Image 1: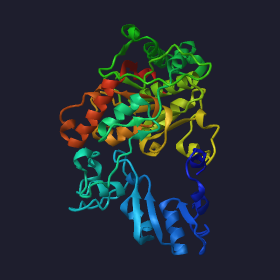
Image 2: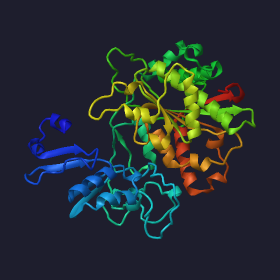
Image 3: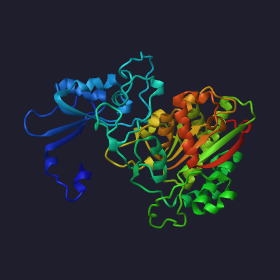
Image 4: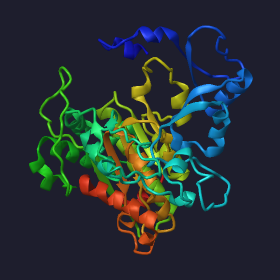
Length: 451
């Protein structure tokens, strides 16, 4: 409300009749007054609002469901019971985000997605397996073609306040309409990464071989940001698709020589020997991630970093690798525990968060390192890794730079893996990233990286 009031020429008198409150404990939160013309707005989780409405016998005029793609129909029914007969519902969510995690097996009905999310039920009424939800529908607004039987009820918001133009262009390839990014690339990113040349592995507790390769990669990124002609000598492979960049005005006192920042980077990890175990590969992958984190912390100490992992074994491996460095790491629980609603968290820019992609959903960071690699001759879990929504959530957490660590086994899977339609869509999304990213081959002897 204060932000609204700060905008000139907007009417604000009506705000005196609006009272907004967060329901932290539905059983104890005070209810609305019986008299007066005050409009009450209550915000909270499904379960706290259910307790609150039940205690006060509330009938509401409007129900706004945020993050509807992560809320099941069973959960939302708890608060729908409080909607008045003429009440309205506004459902907001991202159809390309991950669905709520369900541990049980539910029947697949013919008519509706009863056991899916609220958003899926509204946008995709035909039954589909939860593991193979359909993508965001493509529709032509000029022809009035929408994915449901109610034209005009679905509106895509195109303004994006997190992604810069480079990231925004890529992510919007799976949506009906292109995003309109509201921020530009930071022009000083290249200069910040160039300081990696002054770092030493021994000062950060890193494996010298791993750090040397990561140092070369980040230095190469910095080099091409300043001069694209340096690409042949940098070890980087230029992307097939390059877009004109919109550069943000540099901060006072910051370098201005780097005018071509990069937002998408791909590390093609090749571990050997050939017959290494999955666990050994995960440790090697974690060592690379830890070296990236430690280097980025030194190069850009005021920016936050996410390490997004598909599996918990990867999360624990990265945390173990980071424990031996000079940089601390926090879990998502610690991160949220220090947040303060309504005020800036001074420590937030100094955090490194390592967690699974599902748990990072809804968060953002300047740098995001995504771990999507497997060892040679490994194809058991590729359908899970190539789920488009999982890839989208991981990559779209980034505000400045996304570094995706993958391998040939994921980037060039067998035809058998791509026989599944949903896996093929995820693979197409991954290849679109590869075409837009600056690629770097990183070979590593996993036997020498044992933690």
